[in-house]
Image 1 (tube, rainbow, N blue to C red):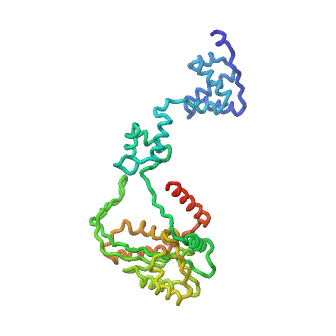
Image 2 (cartoon, rainbow, N blue to C red):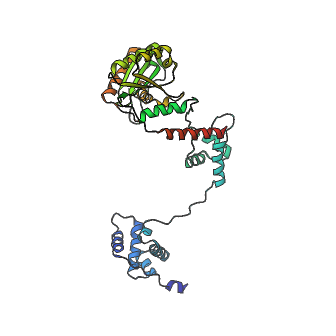
Image 3 (cartoon, helix red, strand yellow):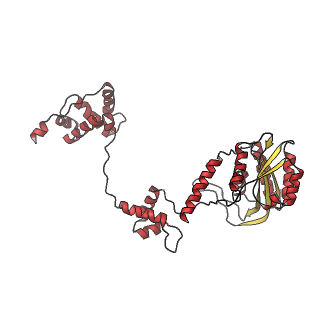
Length: 365
């Protein structure tokens, strides 16, 4: 015992930068107390003082002095700034139990009273607390309460149509326009039964769930991919007669002499014999059809989503003309400050995702 106490500790030699840093830390100006104490230990040790003398001068134990001398010799200044990691308490939930919760969440269904797992159902099934299940799910990024919709097109000409539309986006032809044409049908003029409540601090805006319907309209829109401007018209019905009327509107509002490559979906109206006859009489019009169940290929759907979110969803319209006016006002505002939607996904990227999705579906079935 005496020989161990009298054994001299390893000497500490400070470089110029280390000496300056230790002096600043030991003065204790805006420094954590523990860092000040450790710096003073190293400063006194660098002066050749023994551990017991340093402990007496600073009012701490000798093992504490020995600990920080050894940490400094091993890690230098970085060793003083941060405590060594501690083992912590032993986990109450074993790794096997965590794996069981994860496997059950991914590959098993809950009892008959539910279609998906909740924290309470899983806690009851595994004999854990709800908070423990929530932590396990968060650590493994599991969200059983969320789902997303998807649809794989079964169009036999999917690849050909996809190549045609994506090719127009990425390599547009010269002396031509590429309007993305679409219809947003059954737009309802909904009037809330009571005035909405405005937003306040710590409270979002509110409006009633019930409404009065004052009729519907169909919005025909053509988004100019190159400029971001929109040609729009509202009509009471959605037939080939209305589509031809909208084609005439596009013909009138676009520069003569330019070919028009219209990207449209597979709605039957677009393939009506009278529409085909009208197109033959107007050879500058060329229709490019998106694959079945692939409306995401038509960029006008992005504009429709913005119209719904920004102008229609929270609106209250006391009659159909009020809804129509709101739509035309939004189109006018869009054309004054047009936003160009840029398509970036290549054909290979899209096909790689679709192939991966099909492989996942085949593995399940």
